[in-house]
Image 1 (spheres, rainbow, N blue to C red):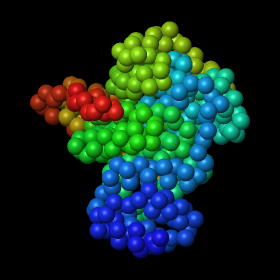
Image 2 (tube, rainbow, N blue to C red):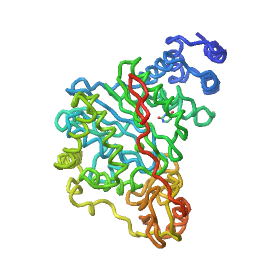
Image 3 (cartoon, protein in one colour):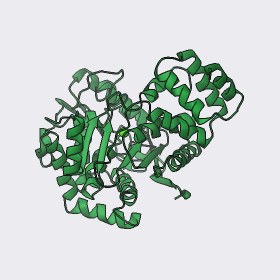
Image 4 (cartoon, rainbow, N blue to C red):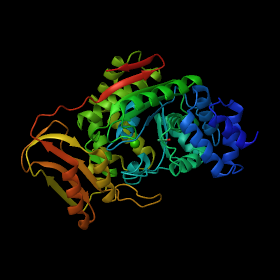
Length: 441
Ligand code: URA
Ligand code: CA
């Protein structure tokens, strides 16, 4: 099998064999195929697409390019969750302790972030003392004992995906449904998930701007899950505005504690309860999503979910007292309220601009390896549809760099557009894709 034959076949719209896809990925991972041939193949895939069988073969070939984590020693169905990215997406920090408290084992291998805020690992590192790198034995032991463990993702998880993603990024081949679907699914499968819940974000602040494309992506991933024996459910959620109120690492930990305490931004709570309900059903801890939801609400109300968060933090060396006293989290030196210049209804909150503002403050990374400021970020004080009076605060800036305050305040004022006419808040949960099909709310 020569690479040129496989490129020609895909270019001409002929379905590839599993063995051809496996061979190609293996050869690319071991540097036997140069970037220029892989780039040509990716562009052929971009134009010709892939069948479900091809996409499933690509998913498994990428998953198997590194270590396939074996969690069979841990009893129970391991259900992993993935969000396709967004702004103020604090769902993982809430869901991990919440579903662990309900008895679903949470084994998370998370990454550091690139972009608006840190990844889950960066956020957890805002907790004093928290150790985000666990050896394999410790990871398994914590899972068995506490039902929850989180560790930084090392290079061994689906290395082919990392290499391919870097190439896609510079060859205009990121926006291909089969390539995105296989990229996401390969990492979840290699991380040991038995079943998968996907949060596919749609809207101006998301990777998928358009609902039809988001549905296609969700359906593709659910079908791949079926084909490879990892049942998958995808929830389509709106990202027309930041999901939670906080954008920034220690600010998001604080917000997660709020939600686990039964307070916090209702939209963030709602998405967490929806995703969590499906995780409980897939994990065999509830028969219906309605029953699962009542269970999760009970765990929040009784403070058991919050206690699980504290137990998890302590198990990984962190200061568990932060669940009662968030003042022990890193605090910014400067706190500035941004007030509205006008009055009216909030029409738009540009999530991407707000994410950019948080990154300028040091909450996120512009380049790999950049040191982030765990205390920095933004808290949004309004939602779409809300009436704002003149001089009412629309956001709060948290910064350790005084020189950034004015520039960021200006970006935030521009990001929140206020109109005289009443505006409706867009629906939050757009739809659901399961192995039985698509449901639109
Ligand atoms: N996220 C991923 O992990 N992979 C993609 O290809 C796109 C988004
Ligand atoms: Ca995220």
